[in-house]
Image 1 (cartoon, rainbow, N blue to C red):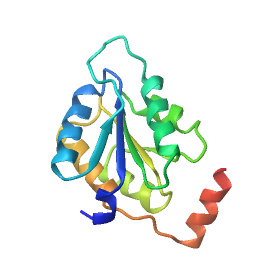
Image 2: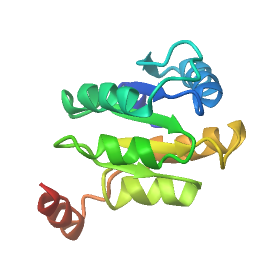
Image 3: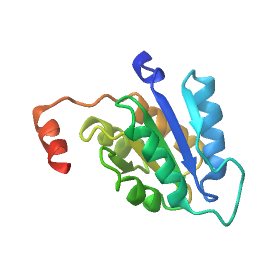
Length: 150
């Protein structure tokens, strides 16, 4: 994995649907040398609400040009919709390595949202690894398109 990515702070968040995969991913990333902070839910709570964790991660990522976020919920959609309400956040729903890598390469995504109902731990690990090891293209057309978002 690229050294520059390992220096980035990674914030994690999940509701009850993504809790088990988030716990696995946190252990995996820490074992690989990433700086990881879990913004919740830190204890399984079947009555929690995904926007609480999406907002917490989005606010942290907003504060740093190098911070990244990974969010987990049942479909991934709720987390993605909520995170994208924050200026400067480019949250992408990823269900495959290819969709994750394209979100980084073309759109410089800074948060990835994973659908816990549709993927398993191994898939999550591979998707996240692909995302973290893909650089933004720096292509003029991609920069132009990102500027149009804000």
